[in-house]
Image (cartoon, rainbow, N blue to C red):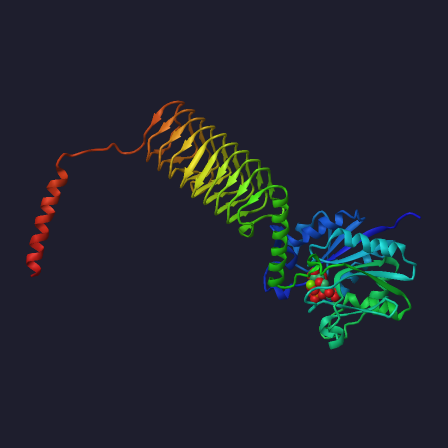
Length: 457
Ligand code: UD1
Ligand code: MG
């Protein structure tokens, strides 16, 4: 028998009221990535015929985050059952398995979904759906799976509808249900909203099915499965983030990265780190960071969308902003900010500098307090420092400007014109000196002060 196809429906139209945030709930990031994108990535691995994400009116930002997958607008948010019913027109001719997921359960493992699909495919045709069950440490807020003595699933009762004895049950709905397409919309049409929230609960299709003589089944995960936690509040989000960070740091340690104080290092879902890398305490990786082998990152550095090549040394207190490319054996020191710039092989920017929209040539030395003045209030312009150049401390290089290979810039210069290879450029007032002037002033000021004191007396 040929296997039937799958369509995935992800529910993401809820207001996320409990988050107390203007950002749609499913766009809140986990380890730097909007939570819905984890789920999208997971279900893509199931090779579904289509993924449809249900969004609310005005949630174009969610549509953009899930593109090229389809979105469908649930015009009034009347509950999870109502949200799935919005797909009726789109899916009524589909013949296969419809997997309904909650967009706020982002870390759902693909293996659990595959198990659900295997169970429904192996079951007799009277089995209309399979639910994913789990045992959260704190079951408050989750729907409870009510099972019959033969082990079959006969209802899901939402927490707020459950009796105290039902609430005491630990087996909960993880928010993943796979339903045979031929039953889904019939079951949904029998679901009402006569409950505490006045909502159409998707979970009520289980009781409707049982009532109509159909069977429902469930698969259960073994542990308390932190990955199945729903994210409804900022506390839930913080807990999920802590879990993700632990996973990411664990993977780094397993691959041989030295994290001197792991709990203080914050990673992103896509942070890539090579071999023999040492990361000191309090380092934050934003998205898109690649660190090659033998790099040392000292404390209190912040990096995003940057690459650091082999043998480079960063920090302490350095900031690499998007587009920073630090080549092999370069040194970036304290209170240095680099943006959209390349620091070539062996170059040094060791203290208190801003390098923006530029290039620091191989082996060049950028003195303390150097600023690439890259913005005139309207446009950004670039600064190019040649290989082996030496920029004296406290210099301002006003872009667009080019400093030749091997050139030297005198400390405190404001450079507005290109400097030729191997030239010396000094652009500051000439130093003047008046012999004895200081003692004259001391004497004069001293006399004045004594006279003043006399008057006050
Ligand atoms: C839901 C389940 C509960 C389960 C839990 C797992 C229902 C009625 N309850 O509860 O059994 O244990 O998830 O985490 O299904 N949504 C819409 N349109 C709506 C309402 C909600 O698209 O009209 C979306 C939300 O954006 C969210 C998902 O559906 O992504 C679940 O809604 P939520 O309000 O979070 O339900 P829970 O109370 O968590
Ligand atoms: Mg939820």
